[in-house]
Length: 299
Image (cartoon, rainbow, N blue to C red; front, side, top):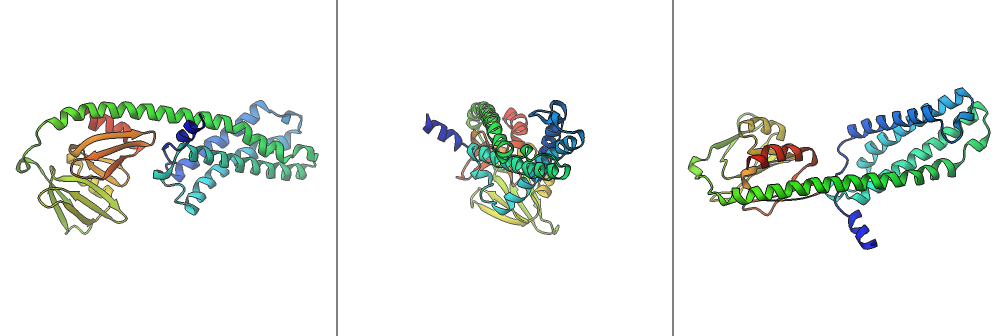
């Protein structure tokens, strides 16, 4: 059982999407904490005078918001390797949320001490064990359950998509490829509006962003890649007439859906295997539903 639990904790899990989403999550969580304390007044808070009681409720909401937002903003910049999506797992997600919970508890402890001293309240209202450790141990159970449930939901959803995609690919791959002289030409224009690269749609594999450049991977008589200075978003606009055959599946990649021969997946997203290449292409979580609707349904 312990071994199975360890395997689950090591399973891939979607990483946090952005600092802005952390801010919104923190704002919502802070508002929830404030409303929860203001409405229910748990743990004997109703015995406090009105002024310090309101100050504590507002303060707990602000501490929650700031702890979530600052952790999400600062720590990924201090330890970027830890937060890379390819390394993120269910265990790391639970550990991360437990750490944030501890910082919230510590912040509330410091705030409670300052406000009680300001309003002359007895020190028994401020206990490290009650505020920090109890907060952590109360929160760890729902944190674990919520993330396990979300992991199971994402895994089940992506497994259904993988099954559907591979069933359709069996029929799609069995069909003969169009002759290259009948395949449309894809012309890519660089940022300077002078450099161009032309390749047939049948030979184009995928386009990948690399800082301020893109790498165009193609096959043919001489398989290779071409470097152009351009953003991937700019190239995506140029390729709009070929949508959804040329599909943006990740913030760093556009894939030729005609080249897909196999789809695999986990809770983190989907992985595409392309014809004539060993590179595995990721379909990020935000693109999974569109990929299913626009690409898989049209295979």
